Image 1 (cartoon, rainbow, N blue to C red):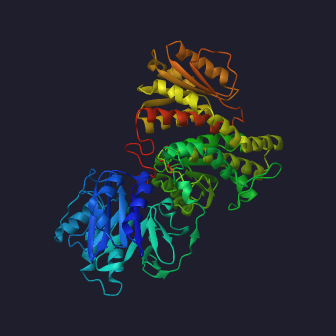
Image 2: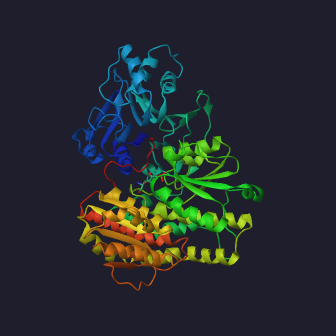
Image 3: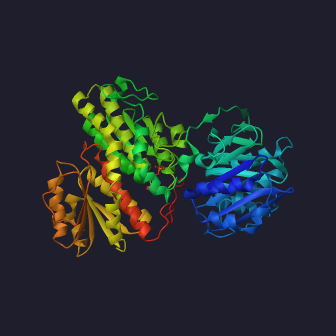
Length: 612
Ligand code: M6R
């Protein structure tokens, strides 16, 4: 849950490192630091606070080195402080390390090193790494490739997850990197090489990337890179060309990434649809070859994910069950992995992860694979860890999502899951052509209809302006509208810090209605024609107890007791969440803005949760 950057080339390293950190701040932002090799010594600048603080340190201007590593932190072991900030040095100040992940056995490693005379300045798990490297470097490592061998010996002792960069004043021409269960990519050109936790940090410099595998080492020089496997045998590696445009990862005139990403949704959905289907033709997924016999053998589908991705899974379940008649369960990854789910070779498991790096989701996928299920990853990040673990991958192609609060990834995940459900039903031979063709037409209409929803932004902003000082809000809906209510409530909590809950509208009278009193805000989502009347009755119950109501609907409501109504276009209920969630995303956004909060980097959160 931290961001790491590295550079080795001919130009000054610090601007590249700082710019890289700035674009990785979504991964953590409680402290930042940098280490470069200056006149054959390691120079380290670091402190608690954001990358902007680091950038303003006067000493940074004096660093002229063209090799360095850098880190932006999301604290796990030890509070944010200068001592706990990365990079960390060994006691002899010969090795500098930045690390993203968690070293689970750091206590015993610390005790071991302490018994060998090492001392520690921080409370972090990371500080054992440079000291272990020093220990092995000075204890019996042969001279050949001594630096790499010392790093490898240290890494062999680590349990947990890590993406690590190491530099040494003894080897001022190279950066050594290794990873396990934490992301790390290397951007490459003929004269310089870049390292980062995520692609957008180095997109301004290159589109050619190496995606490091677990337990793989890279020794990175300015004009070449050597790759090694876990036994230090050298290996060759193919370059991957990443099509993302660097400007797609910038704000393009929007005040925040979140607002930009909300507005990008008509386009991101166009990209998700891509050429996966045309009217009158079957849906196709080039990278999936599941035989009809296998598809017919599936007796259960699990959709597993966390947070917003899990909410997208709930909508996917509805589409799969309605179109394919296969029982489908949605699970929170952190629960699934420990509840001993019933899985066999007739179970098909879908894992949704925008980042593709969420530790719980990856672990849940590995579990299903080990029990013989086939696994499908739905991800936005090409080459991310989950895509390398899964049997099959389908990409959302929503473009880089930088804001911590997920918006366009969610809508793209839903679109892709619904298209996948159509693909399944067509390949199972269970599709009703009229139904699927009309659904396809509605999917193709989504971008235009979304544009018309976005045109109502001002109305939502007005409502947000009136109620942003409140402390509790409730979201209600039935069926998929309830699933959207859950997503609206999560969005509000995470960026505005307002307490909110989502309830299935029919469940209200079984307890939660006790919370409704004069002036409380209740947001109702009413888009499914079959369920609208029932939800209206439930909302009526809160109106009569004094609640203020905001209604998102695509129906003509006879009842006008509600305070605000946002009308959205009508569409097939299987995809209506894509339209109804947008007012809720905007609602959360404007409430947070009114409260003067940093919407892109909400407190305590990180974009990519690579720890359990
Ligand atoms: O990268 P992932 O899709 O695996 O992330 C899953 C959740 O951590 C993520 O959706 C989180 O809930 C978002 N911050 C919500 O906006």
